[in-house]
Amino acid sequence: MQTLLELAQGPLFRLTFAIMALGLLRILILDIWGAVEAYRKAGDKNIPWGQAFRKSLAWLFPVGKAFGSRPVYSLFSILFHIGLILVPLFLFAHVELWKSGIGLGWVTLPKDWADYLTLSTIIFGLALFIGRVAFRASSFLSRKQDIIWPLALIVPFITGYICANTGIAPAGYQFFMLIHILSAELIFALLPFTKIAHCVLMPLSQFVATLAWRFPPDTDEPVAISLNKKGVPV
Image (cartoon, rainbow, N blue to C red):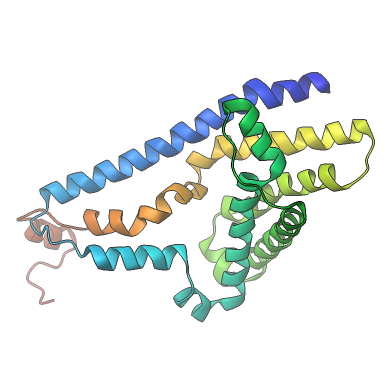
């Protein structure tokens, strides 16, 4: 078991983290490159930067339309994402690992806060899973992987909480710690290839969309023909 832990904490961690970082960087570069190319070819280069910035803030802090249509689900989703981001980044044990690995550290969460956020992330993740399964409107729009993702994402939280807050035997601790690390590394490896990759694009989503949706000159007729709308008044 100790050998497996050392493998998971060392080479496997570096491999999966590299896959995640390089995969997300590739997605970001391709999206920005595509938007810049579309902007370069566009006839209308008058970009409403202020509007794009406001829309980006609305996506990052969805307190408007989201709460109007599905307030409870939206609240659970926001609280789930808060724990999903803060706990892995600011948990004391994680920061110490970064410090020992790359020599950089930062402020950490008090243990009580980390425990509360961990439990809330588990609870809201289960609530989102139940909501996606139970409500037809959500399940109709969700793929199977979208339904399963909340469960996969809370596995490291459950196992990490058990390791940090229960007095289990050494063998049990090693087992749960191995599951904790491997489940996190599985998320690392899959992240660039799933819908969760939007985490790196979300802050730029509205800017990319604003740049990209600009038709080049003389494309109105081909677009109308492809839509079978040539000669139809708009």
